[in-house]
Image 1 (cartoon, rainbow, N blue to C red):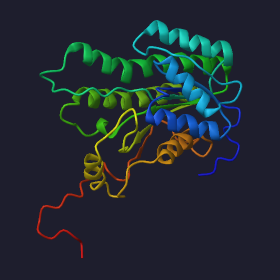
Image 2 (image 1 turned 30 degrees about the vertical axis):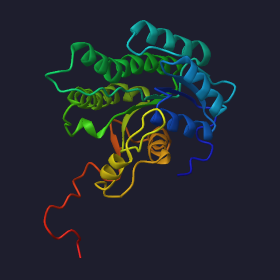
Image 3 (image 1 turned 180 degrees about the horizontal axis):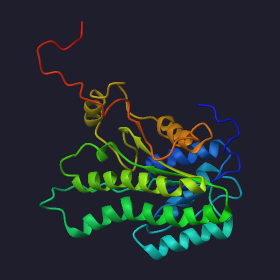
Image 4 (image 1 turned 45 degrees about the vertical axis):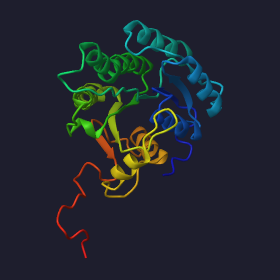
Length: 263
């Protein structure tokens, strides 16, 4: 997808920047000339990512604990000090601890809701206020998941957090529309893992075999979706959830009869 110079000089905040998806999104905006504000918990990893991306001079990174409301306020304040207001905010950070509902402890539940739901609420509100004060509108993108619509054993809290995030997306879209701020969600598809989050090859093959388009998500799949809903081309889109998963959420390719092929 060609966005020409549309994002040149735009100020973009990406949370969870050191994760797989966060890195893809940051790199895509960098490639289109945007200034980046990257955040994650690990200062060393953030510094390494910033160096790897070679972001523009007006870019910066800041480590922050998304479970800490004070840290979130300080982070937003630093963005305002440096930029006045961001043009685009991508609430990408998310955690995915597993456990049956009868086993998972309250602390894990609170952490999932804190990072996946509470942090996007707080940051969206803080950055929306900056955008309103600047009087220039903006775009907020929440990274959701097909888990918002399909319950999965051992990760029910994660599913609940993403369902709530979708509703929060629509709520913010409704209330911020008058200020020219659009709020959307993107649901990425299955990823084959990374050095930090490896997946067994057998698992990757099994899951990929069930995806209608027959492959895992690539960096461009997710990044182009985020770029689109943040662009002028997506200027009439708000309150939407864009699913980019190769058809994985529309049904199953599993065939249990003897006949395994259509022809």
